[in-house]
Length: 356
Image (cartoon, rainbow, N blue to C red):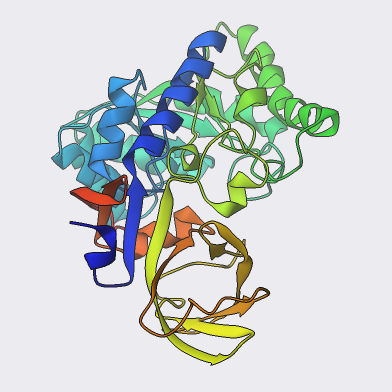
């Protein structure tokens, strides 16, 4: 089927570009010796995860416990829930999951350690954890100066298994490439080194340090403390990350239909906030950078037209470049896998709606 025979909006993924992106990351990390634990929250698709594992990824990162459950249901092992799991219902689900697969979880508070340890001890299981550190993003994560003490508490907890440290320098990834960014990222990651050195005095090894993202992978992969990268967007890319990581290609677009051309300077697409996330970046039509998304409404996208474009009339189908993949792909039930303008497969977005 040709892509223009699809109804719209439809999510398209160019499989050749996707595979080039995956191979490129695999080659770079093989060179540095850092492992890849790709962050599946971006695309929530088993087929992409399997391709990454085939290329040497050592496991998979998730944001939510429900995402990890879906991956386990599809036979994926060696999971990291890069988040805190709190509250009895979720902790019980985590205990059930750890009986099925190898799954680690982040922890950043003594009370959370106590709750996880009690549940694991009662269930006669050992729950692998990474101590989650705030390395500057001011989101979750324990302060670096308190991290070693929390590690000691984990090590002393019979139901827990200390696997290492994690953190995310996400406040720095959008900086333009250059010396300033390199120094800032390394300074953030050095916080891991300080904690590792402190733990050495207690004879505590730190096997895993999980950090990094698509926006700073080249720096994080070369930091001596970092053992694995939680990169995700690189696989499909978007205009947000493409602006500062241009070595990866844009694989994902949304096929849309022009529904209205009220005037020469404006056209309306059948894709709005329920089908594309423009919160962090703007978007343009594929191969037509002067046709730019100006506003999104619930079901409409208003594009400004800075060129003479008599072909963009109601009924014409166009491709919109995805501005923010992590906030867009989850709104679709499936991806149409494309090669040379033809749909060659359909992959379900199995993690759609998995937010618990």
